[in-house]
Length: 321
Ligand code: FAD
Ligand code: NAP
Image (cartoon, rainbow, N blue to C red; front, side):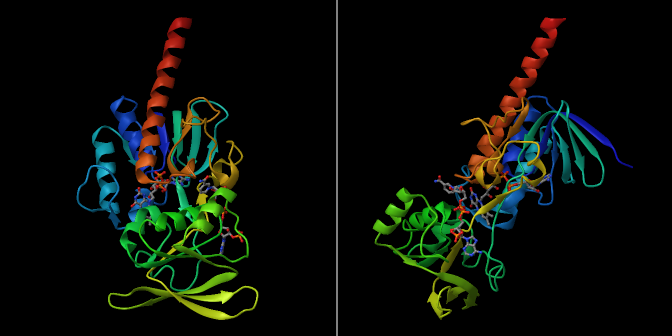
């Protein structure tokens, strides 16, 4: 039978943003509930080595880090629920959400931390070679391609930034774009064209990610020219797919203001949305940084803001009595 769960702080998402909000919320006595969604632990559970999360001198594993974060959140008083939110009502408080089995979740405050997913090309070899030469995050994985030959696929700001970033590690970076002009901002294009370590392949689509070697890893890309149909092959050790990200905001689109690309709009420098008591943190509101540590940081900010909001509400109630 469907149940109703009520809390002072409801958190949607169990990635670094949601669990960091939970740790702070629980320690403030808000008895948070975290609804975990379809990917408990979030994006870091689908990677292996994490080398840039502060506090660990040796390489740690993404799934392990997320297990530890969840254990820490639960130890200080968080309740985690296996459910996915399918419907929301932000028109009054408590905010009311419906899980896919019919359970109702009510929160005096709400922290949305539903993250974003990199878009993939869906081509042969891509999934099999993911983590073995194919990646969607140069900041995360670029370090593993020091001195190697790499390609970045896409023509927007992300692709250009990833290509520029990769020149910190590689002297041979190829940007592959399906058209003859970039979508990226001019200033980024200027930097790209001025960089001698980067060459651009125009009017090319990737047809296949090619694996080889022992252990199996990416060895190259089969390409096709979008104008002439000519086929070619580019040998590379790493390929970064940078064709955009999709924030998980489908269920909020009629209820919250979204910016270009579907990210939740927040007051600059804060996790506050226009609705008092409702916060967004992590990749779902951040199209620029998209890192575990920034997600955790904004999760902390959301919890602190929620705590202050509830304290103010209580003070106003007392003053009115
Ligand atoms: P996410 O981690 O995306 O978590 C979103 C959560 O929301 C999930 O638990 C999901 O189940 C839940 N959810 C979604 N929809 C719903 C719903 N309707 N109801 C309830 N819950 C919902 N960053 C680094 O700093 N270092 C790295 O080395 C690194 N490596 C990476 C490797 C890979 C392969 C990928 C994909 C990303 C990597 N990142 C790395 C980026 C990092 O994982 C993200 O920036 C970070 O996970 C964002 O955290 P988040 O909490 O905002 O969202
Ligand atoms: P984007 O602007 O949507 O660009 C995606 C790129 O990938 C486009 O060039 C597109 O080609 C290409 N692409 C899409 N699907 C493809 C496919 N199937 N095969 C081959 N190529 C494909 O995405 P983004 O670069 O991630 O940027 C998203 C948003 O975040 C934008 O608003 C951007 O301005 C913002 N952003 C800002 C910054 C910054 O301010 N520093 C940094 C990163 C991102 P076409 O051009 O042919 O469509």
